[in-house]
Amino acid sequence: MSATPSQDFKLEVVVIPVADVDRSKRFYTSLGWRLDADFSAEGGFRVVQMTPPGSPCSVHFGSGLTSAQPGSAQGMYLVVSDIAAARAELIERGVEASNIFHRVAPGKPAADGLHPQRASYSSFATFSDPDGNKWLLQEISSRLPGRVGPDAVTFTSAAELTNALKRAATAHGEHEKRTPGQKHDDWPEWYAAYMLAEHTGKPLPT
Image (cartoon, rainbow, N blue to C red; front, side, top):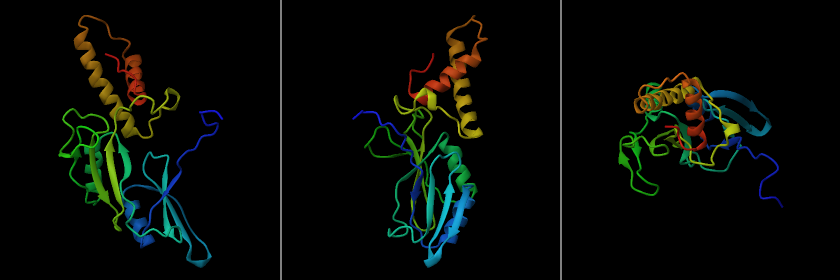
């Protein structure tokens, strides 16, 4: 058997256990999540599907979906490109989000605030839904090698693209300082190479 699967296995839906379907629907709607479906069947069965902004994966909650206790889903990751902005938006929407914290290395104790170097994968915040299902925000601006192929790089929102362009602009400014007197008419190509390298974990252009 080939080591490489012949089919894609894309994570489509995560089921979260809730006690009050309509309350959960109002909560996730208040976050700006997209309502994809809400349908019922005989026997009290009901399923609501909602999708976080820019996410290829959705969540299901409802009645008759799972035997898990409401609030028992913990540590579900939501990846953001700017955790400070994401946390501020949650608070503006009425969510009680934790303070931002960071880890200098996997398995090390958490410390307050953003990672000092704003390292990718290292800054976090948490919030919970009305049942206590817990979400973890993680800031990722540059992927580790091998996580994303060059043919799968996408920007799923204007905000994500804007943040990537800002990081590329800052890096290009440093590039210009290191190369005084040179023309930099190729900045669109440089930006593109930088943004692609960030997403695929390749060495960043200097």
